[in-house]
Each structure stands twice: as C-alpha cells, then as structure tokens.
Image (cartoon, rainbow, N blue to C red; front, top):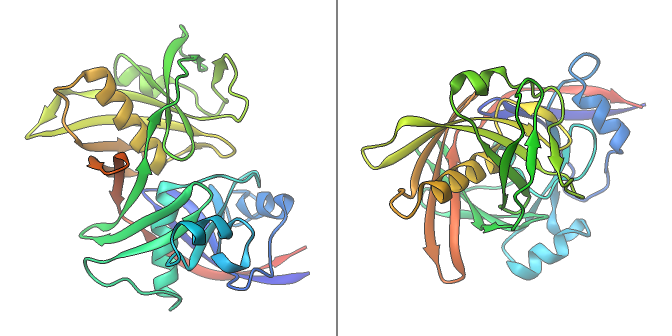
Amino acid sequence: MSTLHFTKGHGTGNDFVLYSDPDGERELTPAQIAAICDRHFGVGADGVIRAVRSANIDAGAAALAEDPDAEWFMDYRNADGSIAEMCGNGIRVYVKYLIEQGLATIEPGSTMAVGTRAGVRDVQASNNGFQVDLGRWRLDGNEPLVRAKNLKVARPGLGIDVGNPHVVVALADDSELEQADLSYIPHLEPEQLAGANVEFVVPAEPLVSDGVARIRMRVHERGSGETLSCGTGVAAAALATRHWAGQAAPNHWRVDVPGGTLGVRMFPTQDGEHVSLSGPAELVYSGSLEIN
C-alpha cells in the first residue's frame, strides 16, 4: 500500500482527480485509475490527471519540440484507465491546480503553454475561469449512423476532430435529448476503430440572439460514459451546428450542458481556423488515498 495525495476538481461538472508527480516517478496503472474513479468504491471521477513536467514523460518530448515553454504536461486518463489525447474541461482544471499548488503562475492577459497528447495548448485566465485555444480543428470525413438507446431511429452523425475524435448528432427537440439513455454506449455504423465521443445536440429557438448562437448538448465520452460536460465535445458540437447552419452562422457560441454553460469561439490564424473554449474551473477538496 502507498499513499496518494490528490485534489478533486471539476469544470461544469466534468470531474477529475489530480495529483502531482513533477519528476514522472509515479504513473498509476489502468486498474488503479479505474478504482480511483469508481463512484461507489473510490473517490469518483470522469478521469485522472497527473501533473508531470514535459521533460519527465516520453509523450512530453513532442510538446517541448513544439513549444519549449510547455514545461508542464497534462497526462490525462479516462475513468476506465485508457489514455485520452485531450480534455477541454480537464485542461482548465489542470491549470487551476498548477497555480494553487504553486507549480506555475499565469499573469493577467498572458498565456500558459501546456503539453498534451494532442499537441501544445495555450491557456489564458478569463473573467469566468480560463480560456483554452484547442487549436486547429477539422471535419474528419466520417458521417456514421448513430443509434442510441430510447431513440427509435438511427441518426446521421458528423465527425469532428479537435485533437480527439467526436461524432455530433442533431436531434429534433428537447424531449428527444432528454429521453436518450446515454448510460449505454451509442452504436456507430461503421464502427470507429479508435472510438469517439458522441454528442447529441438541440439548437435553441431562435438559434442566434444578439450575435451569439446557443445549443443544448449531452455527451457519451469514450472511456468514461455519460458526463455532465465535455469541453472538446462542446467545441465539436458548436462546430458541427455551425457547419449545418451555413455561412451566415456566427463564430460565438454558448453551449448548455447538464453541468452548466461553456463558451466557444472560432477564429482565423495563419495555420487555419482555431476554436477556443472558455468556462469555469473549480477545485473542490484535497485528500489522501491508500493505493494497492
């Protein structure tokens, strides 16, 4: 048995167990992570985030090559212990954790570079928490049929890549959104070999008010099940809905999820259009856990 000192945090209800391992000496096994994330017998979380310096983890070499200022790497694992490329809510909570632990600082108006398996992501303090540049996004070319429990008919989905894979599905109204049983994994035809997060979306009526578009979303996250929020999924849902709405759709979005509301913004850069995510990050409590 050994003791793990941890902090519990969340971003709009998407919750994480975070722990500090700057030197990269304590990598938990998938079984240990699954036990920690168990909501009945463990701490309970959608995933585990290890705070490790990029120089001390193999995956950090690419981050440092991309940006030498990316001192810290977000080593993120899903609730089942599997590796995930990125987490839009998790990275905001991660930066909050680094600051609270005295491991990093971020000045007002400045950005902090964070290494992830999807590349370096820049995080900036904002009025309601943090804003993260999720980088360049793309349509991945997939349009699978999606079947979900309690939805009578399979729906077409749109594949969106924002550093990790998503399939976004439009539903007719709020009643369909509420009746979908996302405790079961949605079935994709054809199956996505690497899996995907699946978002179900309903546009507001009207879609746009005062130049900002608004949608509601629920999500089944690959490796975690239904969560109260998914940051990269929120961005993917806004991008997909804008794609469906056409060229007149705005670049500023508000996305309501069961855990709260997040902001999405699309903007041009030299290497193509980027998408950013803004929202709160909360640290709830710290504790110690005996690990087998």
